[in-house]
Length: 276
Image (tube, rainbow, N blue to C red):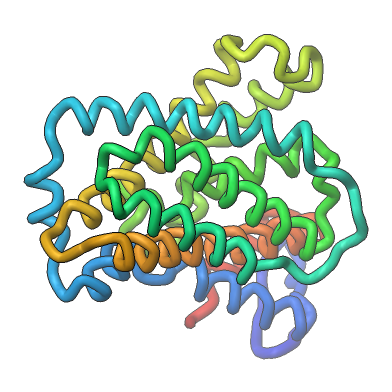
């Protein structure tokens, strides 16, 4: 049994403590992952709830968001796998990606929800590049297939549903729900790459992620339909959109870095016992 920073966790009949610096990093990750939802942050920006915008979304737009979200994720994965290299870890360029997201939000806000099919693939690719940038800054090798799939996994975090209820186990519930699909997709991509884009394993993974990410996209579209929300506010909403997923990525890849060092069971127990 050992103690460090007043933190003890149990594994294999022994108590093993996380190093103080790692415990602090895990606390920071949990703080990010348990942040207020994007819905709450957008509502705070607008000074109102999003129900008005949701009521203005036509049924065909709801259907289109579902289809466009999955296409955007697929294009984003394709783009990232083809273009991300293997440079040494460096500070992530968060502000550059936020600035680009604001630009697309201003353009999209000027045209309203009609611009969503065009804006969504662009903003998704931007976010995926930012997420990969953050993964690299945490020491992960983004040339590895499992790291690139973990980047996609970020889109399912904080994306609504029963797991997004600010409980301590919500983050791990989402990861557990996706683990089977991630494993199947990794096996397929390792064998065939992205040449067979209609492969059931990849399609199932993207469908699972899109189901949660689509909730967030609907919130974004609804916010842009709220009266008085124009191009400028569209840019602000996209800023929050990017900031939200950057937070999810920073928390996620800190956790995964610590899992490589201590093991998943140990890190999960430490995470759940931490107070923030």
